[in-house]
Length: 236
Figure 1: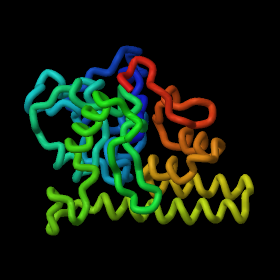
Figure 2 (figure 1 turned 135 degrees about the vertical axis):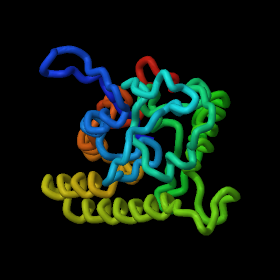
Figure 3 (figure 1 turned 180 degrees about the vertical axis):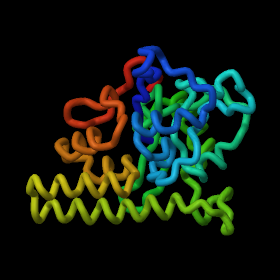
């Protein structure tokens, strides 16, 4: 899960004051501008952003319905699976405050997602809660995956792995600045930030290119070589 930096509340250029959203729908444009049109959970591109995602469901936290720091972007499938359950922030890791790139492992061939085996036991428990909340590991054969489901995230992620792996092979044959630039452009179009970061894990230049190319990626979550580090002020 790509860690993002939403930033502070937007400033109204006409009044030079913080924007106060009367309706949460009005925040969509600014949120997309800050963190890009990618789902903050599965990382797929969301070409038609319907509404902002409420981290804490507005049904249970109506006081946060129009609060900037409760907004992210989510695809329909992740939003539906996450649902409207009564949740508390402390029981999960969140892309806007934690280094969520550290909590999961993405298999470089099968695109399967699982909890990072290098985490401590308490960290694994929270990471597992997060995985279950959005069902990111669901695929045919998973006990909670329905054959009639519209959930094709696993297939889209697998397709991204294929594209990234092919791009990696192309780079080994033709390592030029133009090729690197083209690969980054492909990654932006395909989405699935963590897949590209996994496939190119031993290429610091490409890692930094991906970090800089995806809008709103929290750069404080990575060192100079593009390796994940604990997020300042976060829990992981």
